[in-house]
Length: 461
Image 1: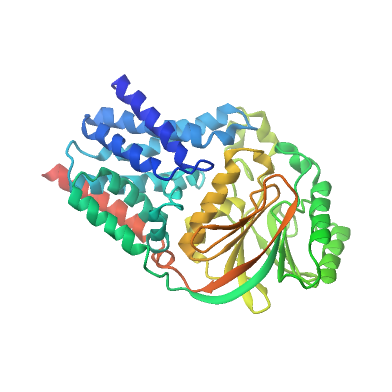
Image 2: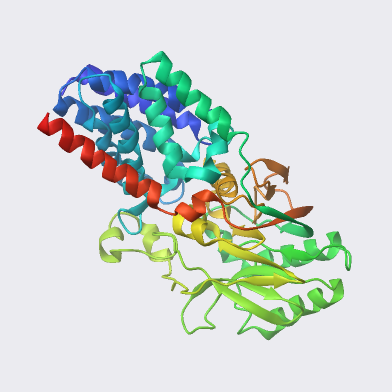
């Protein structure tokens, strides 16, 4: 292992982290992967392995540093050191700069991101480079080839050394910017997104659930007039008092819905199914529909290998294990439909592919992570999803960043962080599915299969 190359690789990884929110410098991966590829083709296999490992380590230790803000550095660094191995497929490139090697580099990044999103404990695909391009010209490709296709393009384009091939690839990007998604526009509906705030940030935010609930109740009463909107949305954990065991709170929300003559979607927790669940509940004015979160956050909503990890952090004992729901719920207002996702579910590619309702509501609670990059990074992932599914997203948080995201991934309107407020906006509605949704996981499967074929061919030649 050559120390100099490893240091350079680590620095390249650190620089690459600048492509993630809040800086969101989308051009950075194209620059750093260009130099990473140069390092790789100049080194033997064992050196390439360590170069890619330390590149991943530099990227993850910066981009995911917010995960250790409240639980300490041990779990956060353990995650980074483990996930850095998932970047080592990039070491599969050979010592020649040619089209085959470029294809291997592109497919290898797709494989790396597959590992990030699946291993271990359902994966933690938060820091996928394919989530960094929503403001770049490549963003036009999201509705057609999805994040897996974008990951391939980032690595493939940066490894090209032929001017003609690079020009041809650039023309493909330009063409995608003029291709319509093929979805039908069904008009709009008016929503009010309530960012009620919490008494304090950090792990102790949920120590005052009644105060958080009162914040959202009062904010709704003072900022929304009867019949002024078609839907009111409260964020995840806005009602962390079980509405099915507390009749007073359930009655208050029903009365508010009746008074404003508007359905209200709340986020809360409940044991209505017999087990603790993270739920969305639609009142109109009584409870008419319930959704239980299906994709739980490891270490946030359940502790895998609890007996092991409780030795790494004293905060493990503070996490109660939730039970996952098992059904997708379609909510209806008037003659339109929407789907609700809760927080971490936005990174699940499978949920992206099933989305067929007119618009998407994302309820989240970022209070746990205070004023860290987590808030902006999650919003950025939601923007990518909006571009992939060709639908607008009503994104509502307890503390920020409550936003309305356009079907191209652009931010249409935003509330300031950490300030109570109500964002009232018209949401454009669509029907149909994008090409990326119809393809589902096939771009990823094809890229991984192609990677294997190219490696076999190289060994035999």
